[in-house]
Length: 62
Picture 1 (cartoon, rainbow, N blue to C red):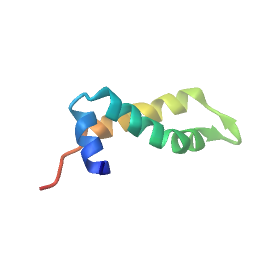
Picture 2 (cartoon, rainbow, N blue to C red):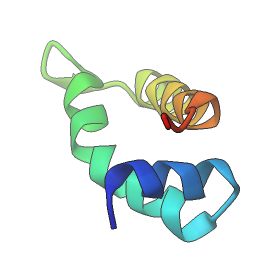
Picture 3 (cartoon, rainbow, N blue to C red):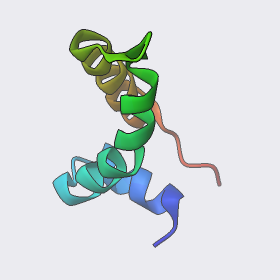
Picture 4 (cartoon, helix red, strand yellow):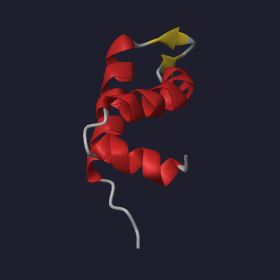
């Protein structure tokens, strides 16, 4: 399945699609949640919220 279709399904509340996207981006979110080599749980949660917001704002291009 194309990534765009996965995003569209996640936006339409397909839990499986949403989980797939979260799993895809989890390593990046973890990497970006390191502050001076220490994992910051609050930062991770904020990044996850932003990811979910981006999914909700996704608009399929025609």
